[in-house]
Length: 421
Image 1 (cartoon, rainbow, N blue to C red):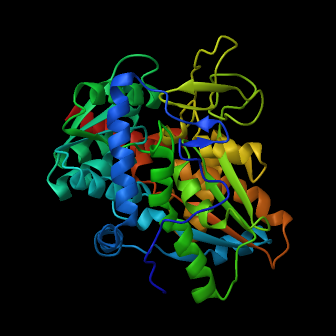
Image 2: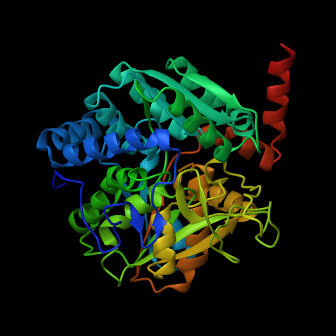
């Protein structure tokens, strides 16, 4: 495959110099964090212009992370659905099992360039925490990961691996004990330790320059898809690209190189949870009654009440169980450039089982949201259409959640036997 030398591309949907995506995004933080963000922005702008930084990053992508990840024609699933051809961008084969390694490597390289000694991060599903702990070990940096207590318990395998990599994993006990509370805890730590610590943010959200920076590091996914379609399959461009959307890093990464081509339909799939009718049962920010707010340093759409108070969310997937969405996604929603749909927990489990049994691929529950929507869409399309699904991660981490959802008695008996020992 043709080598990718530069991931830093420009589109008409980029932010302005202040980090605003037509009013969304920006930098709304305590005054004491402004110098740290200005330092980060300056360092990042310099790094983007430095060919050595790009060379070092691409070397890490190719020779450490294992890129490029495969773009796989899902022949069995395609035939089963009797519609469009389905291709799977398998980010689960990236080192640590998800797309999170992409922006973690980029930011760790930047942290070393800035002379920082410690990485701090928030995580929900644990994949970003795992990737952060991994790059901290790789670069010889101290590491602290904040994780809501609810996610800490339901993603225990990733907690175990983070600790083996040398990270301190801190369960957050305040608020809803989920991802948004982990973000708050990480910001508080950064305020206290700003001189030596780098906040390695896990999605395309937070204060400027994080939404643009994380997007840029994730753009490698979309650039690879463009090359792979042309060079391996002889397809000029896809008709549809589908990705799950929590904060939105994997989706922005695969969408970004295609944003300026209006003929390519882009679909982001939110967490419909138990249904989108009742607040607290889902994490679908853009489905109805969309509300703008300023939370955790940026302006975007959040699930909130009439007083602006952030509301509880629910998703079977810890990584999508978040009340906000990245500001560039908000802008793409406003401009109708990306269509935002949702999948319920039940649909996700069905998609998980279908992909596993038809293609031998076990997806992360986050990624299974994209699969669930593709399963509904593909049969409605002609067989000459091309659908690319961004499979943002693999499902190893979800073994406890899936076993419970499937009511697997053999697995439950096994766990009980282990506890008794």
